[in-house]
Length: 215
Image 1 (spheres, one colour):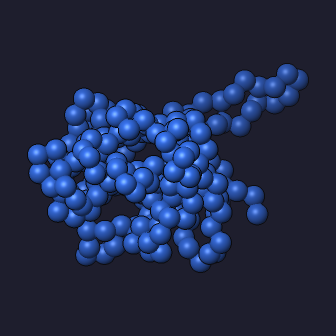
Image 2 (tube, one colour; image 1 turned 90 degrees about the vertical axis):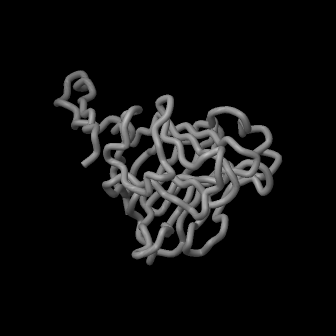
């Protein structure tokens, strides 16, 4: 179970009409103080200063590690802030993903981020499946959008087979999955990529469920 409950409310009834349908509001996936509602290798994840921190500036991360929310989501808008510390840190947010049985990896869409070159900020990557960038901004746009030493705000919208990404208020991805056989539901996971000393920080993680897309 996640530690936070849906904050449900209703819009005001329209003039001269009936009551509006209840509208789900944001679900807090991270309470800012504990990792309740998350599972993973806790040797590589901790809470510090109101954020989830993956990795370490003092030692390498031997392999990819993922901290996952303990329930699945299909259609949603996910909002969070992230920053990377370390010259070559790589990380990402898994969406609609699965843990690979008896393995440390996850399979599925990843909202990518990295320090140095190549720059994956604002890109949608297919982790441990097609193993390629599906869509993303140009390097020139990345230079304008990304705050290398600060917090970067992601908005991730998944509805039907369409995935849209905004980074610091700029839309970087509008991708519709052409392969109808791929599952469009799954886990949300926070990654610290295997590699040299580095940290990925995540905070203000909220999710608003969406109605399924009309066929």
